[in-house]
Length: 190
Image 1 (cartoon, one colour):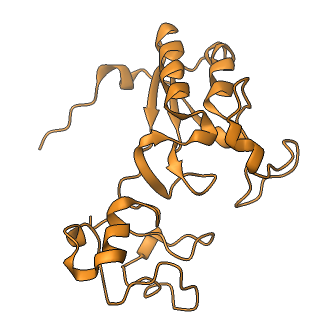
Image 2: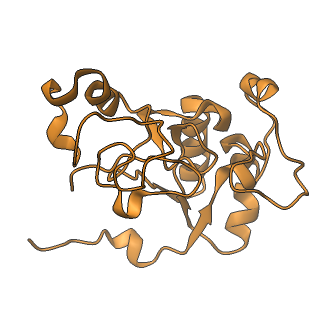
């Protein structure tokens, strides 16, 4: 199958952003009151949150453009239980700690007004334990209609058992999806 690269990509200069650590904007999420944030100036940790959000990115778009960038590549921004958001729960919701869907809409408007493109990292080959379809397998076992979405190696599944070896922790093939900050990260059957 031939691949067609969009013309705009051929001339794009990308600026990659990890939103939690890029900039805090003027519309912080009310949820941040219940999340212990690391000091902004302190060295980041693997699991800590800094409180950056998409509102902060909007406030920095002129700066990014002045540096010569005309496209932004975001690390995952969808609802997740970790600061890097590679353990997605819901691909339809931007993480509320980042400003939610409204902040993404406003960001897209502001970027497009400046002639900038935005690319989102979807990470569709692995998900978090809270992903609906994986939870259905945890609840319904081999009778789940979503069973073929994952590589199940054995039963019973146990998403939170940290005492088992990595490849059998939850009975799914983990491979490259194993992350040192999380005992299990379900991999899609790709």
